[in-house]
Image (tube, rainbow, N blue to C red; front, side):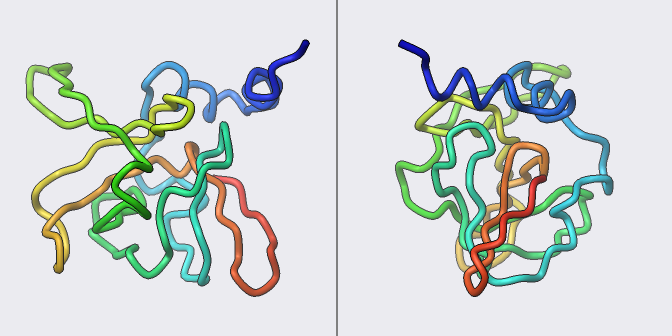
Length: 135
């Protein structure tokens, strides 16, 4: 029997696969969802699990979409990342383990966190129309 998740991963673009499966990073200020201001929910591009509400998104100026909290405590998982000669906290989809980005302690109120997420790891679903926008 075919695994639907594997089928979805096979449909990813090169940058989407690089980011989600190889823990890569898209270039800053290039992501399709960076300037998105629509109301809706950001989902994992690999498994469609909900990750972030649009009302938690803010402009941090860092070049990637930023959020101050995940949609629920169990939506993402956190891993210590010591690459690039520094300590960071990596964020992955808790459902399918896709790499999303990192979380930093310099974010917006009320949490003070900045979930710095690659557009290529998400799909946005518009609340009104249901239209999907790929990252």
